[in-house]
Amino acid sequence: MPAQRLSVVVTRRLPEPVETRLKELFDVSLSEDDHKLTRGELVEAMQKADVLIPCVTDRIDQAMLAQAGEQLKLIANYGAGIDHIDVQTARQRGILVSNTPGVVTDDTADMTMALILAVTRRIPEGLRKMQSGDWGGWTPTAMMGGRISGRRLGILGMGQIGQAVARRARAFGMQVHYHNRRRVRLETEQDLEATYWESLDQMVSRMDVLSINCPHTPSTFHLMNARRLKLLKPSAVIVNTSRGEVIDENALTRMLRAGEIAGAGLDVFEHGHEINPRLREMDNIVLLPHMGSATLEGRTEMGEKVLINVKTFADGHRPPDLVVPGML
Image (cartoon, rainbow, N blue to C red; front, side, top):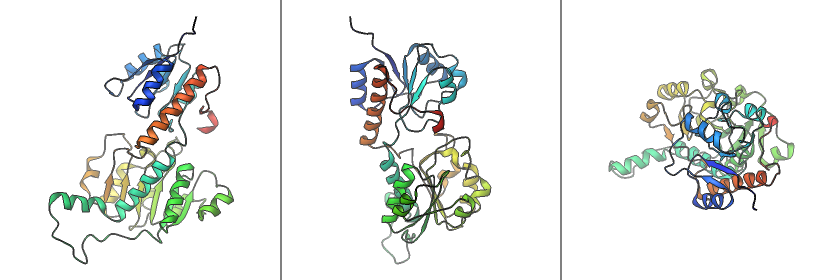
């Protein structure tokens, strides 16, 4: 008699090949309409599933985990970031947590460079002018932006994505600087031609472009607060493809409106999809709907990592992308 298949609940729609393979391997409940699950629906899923496959839109806190069924033994997150899951409480309750690291490194780095170019070269402004039919033809002084070659780029968070951004920035002729919780290896610094700053304040005050590439943790919440944002040069640009909570969004909005920062490119926001409406009113800011990892290839590879984590767990082994306390 074949062994009973694991009960798996998927909270959002995933790429079709991933959903199909999950169906082949497990007893799967898929999201048909792709709606964001309520707290009650998430708790209900955790009460019936052996494995839960959530994503960044699913906040799973201590109170919810306290209501999980005893059979829930793995939360296989679809995504690298795990700040929406109380991993410590999960581990205390005997629930493993896995993620999908390294898959979207290049995609996110590409989007970071796209935002830097979009802001400094005023691409969205030009697009709006063309779409409105307001373009009267070329003139020598119209729509002048800035050249990024030769500018100093400060990278906040020199992990895999930060290093990928650095490689791209070097190809564009930018000077790479970085601040990180730990200094990277000397060989990596030399390869990237990157200058390390132990003091974030000192780095921020000297940069032309600041790229946020660190995860959201209790220690990075509002790391770019009002005081630190004021250290930026009035000509500086800030881009964020990491987590919105790292920047004090209200302070950033005030400074952009006052002309104290030249521009910003944001793919993530402090309050999820609830964006400060004043951000939409300015020409010197580019807003994107969390598109940093949105490539078909990247999202499919994320699903494949989830499959491997769940299948390895089902076979009685440790998931290869297990999140351990030292990573938090």
